[in-house]
Length: 446
Image (cartoon, rainbow, N blue to C red; front, side):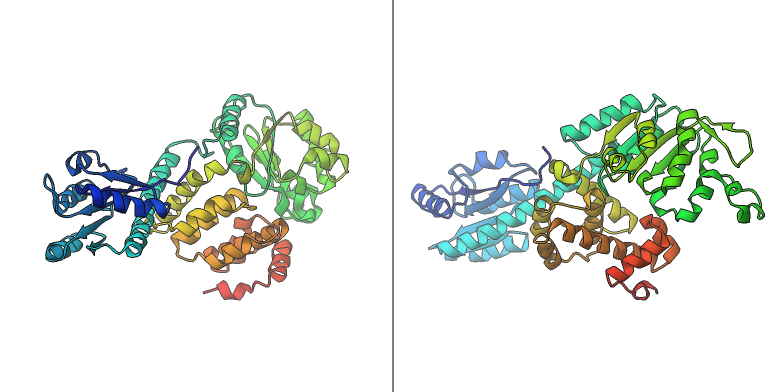
């Protein structure tokens, strides 16, 4: 299981057995894990960059004093917090250590509450250091593997199935909620197939206006007005010898669904009435956000088309069913966004870490990607996240939709055509959503 959470401890170093026991008890009573150490020499040899804790040490010790131990620790990892306990005579020496990176110091007799407060801050500092290092390691790991990122059993099985069916040349239906990565699965199927060097023609079915769907798929011969402007080949013929990708096929008008049946079953197309059918050599990959089996039963999708395109069905799971993959995905997206926008990899605070694993992500991988982008660009709103966590699922989906539109408008600086391409929705639907979410497009235009 990929997890960013790290269990940390206080390592208390002192050769005074009575003081060591007393301060150990202070941490134990505060429910802070503590390890008592009376041999700094052996302890120093066991420290490495993965050291999961902080060091609280006395200064005056016979075999290795606290300052020497501090320098040994800094030589291994300068981001390990070290807190000193010292007598008044050692203060000038400690001030020098503070300049070199020591976390804090306390004069004896020790004020327990102040020591505990400082230790908690030091533990949180170390936690963030280690978690952000792990994020960077995960980001590097993610970029070296499959485009379908994840280590959960459900994702591993999906990757294995993709490998098995990619070269079968059988039509495939990919189902899954919005933002789960259906397009990634479709692309993998194409790239791993024997058709990978031939056309991959994408049709965003949900974005096709009803009156243009036939022309887009079958060509201009289906429209007398357009025929006079010159022949236009449709997406189906353009995919001959390659792959036809019907994204969100449930968005096709019923009449167009009927016209697709000969294409799917016979691999033939009739460009216009009276023409002879033309043979096609293509593979069809379709995606759907809805359960097409249920849709065919309630007549919102043609059953005869569903059973023809459903030769093999793959399901992409929602993010809430594979939460263990979230850190790995997030690491990949944050690294990707930092590179794209020429930013340094940001430090991710503990509130963001909690949000990653506690939030349900109704917008799935796409929403997680937007969250990573907001952190890289420094525009994350913690208040909004806390409010969102209290909303119902439909309310969260509405909020995600509005935020996705705003993010797209920001990226395109209010360019409608580019925004429609990013969102993959028709112009009318786009303006309806702007009105519903009270978004003013002029606010995004430079």
